Amino acid sequence: MEKNSIDAFVPSKISGYRIASCSNDSRGVRQRWLVIESEPRKESDLKQLEKRLTKKYTQAQSQLRKLCQQEFACAEDPFNAAKLLESQLPFHQLACKY
Image (cartoon, rainbow, N blue to C red; front, top):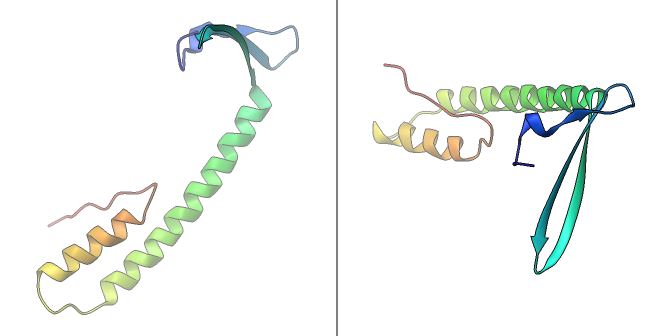
C-alpha cells in the first residue's frame, strides 16, 4: 500500500469499515500490516479536529487583539512582535494587508 493511498482500501464485511493491507521488509524481517478505517471514527476525529482548530483560532484572535493594542517604539517593532506571535501559532499564519 502506498502511503495515504485511498485506492488501497476495500470495503469490509462490517458496514462502515474499510481495510487495506501492506507489507515491507524491516531489517530482513518481512512485516504485513492491516490498516482498518472506520467511517464513524473518522467522522468523530474530524469533529474533534474542528473543535481544536476553532479553539486555537479563537486564542490566536485574542493574542492578535492584544498585540494590536500595544504601543511600539519604532515601525519595525510591530513586525517583529507579529513574527514572534506567528511562530507560536501551530495552525495559523499571519498575513499583512496594506
